[in-house]
Picture 1: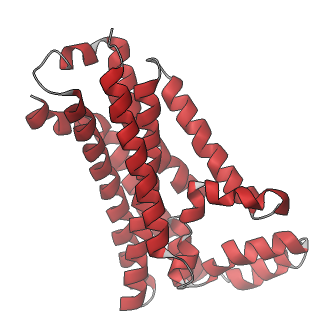
Picture 2 (picture 1 turned 30 degrees about the horizontal axis):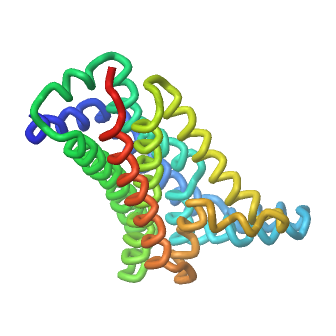
Length: 269
C-alpha cells in the first residue's frame, strides 16, 4: 500500500495549495517585470533613498536596488516576502497534514497496521514533499525565463543564474519542510508542530533581515537559513552557490534523519 499509493495521497492532499503557490509565483514574476518595463522606478527609488538614514540606505541598495534591472527584478520576485511566506506554508503543511493530523484523527494508526516499516513512510513523505517543492521551484524558474523573454532579452548567463537561484530556492524550502517533519515526529499531535515551525521560520527570517541593519546581532546571521538564500547576489555573480546549497542540503538531511529516529521510537495511540 505505502509503496504504490502514499505518494499519490500526499500529492492529492496538497495539490490545491501547491497549484495556488505556482500561479502566485507566475503572477508575481510577470507583475514585477511588467512594472520594471512600464514605470520609471529608478528616479522614484533614488528620490526615496536620499531621505533615508545611511545604514538603511546601504541595506536597500544591497537588497532592492538591483530590482531596477530585469535580471535583478527576476531574482527579487523569487525572494519577495509574500512568495517566501506562501511557499513556506506549503512546506510546513506537508508534514503537519501527514504526521500530526493523521496521528490526531487516528489515520496514522491505520496506516501503521499495514506491513511496512515506519522508515519507509517517513522516506516516502520526505521524497514526495521534496518533489512537490521542486515543482514549485521549477515553476518559478520557467515563469522567470518566459517573463524575461517576453519583456526583455534572455541570455544563457541569466538562464544559468536563474537555475542556480531556483535550486537554492528549492533547498531552502526543503529545509523548512524537513525541520517541520522533525518537530511533527517528535511532538504531540495537533497544531503544535505547524505553529512552532512557522514561528521558527519567521524568527530565522527576521534574524537575517535585522542582522543586516543591526551590527550587534550580525554575528548570528550564519545561523539563519535565509543567509544561504540570496538570489540577487547569485544573479550578479556575487554569491556562493555551491557553499549555500551544501549547507542547506546538509541541514535538510540532518533534520530528515532526526525525524526517522523520533518516528521509529514514538508510540502511536
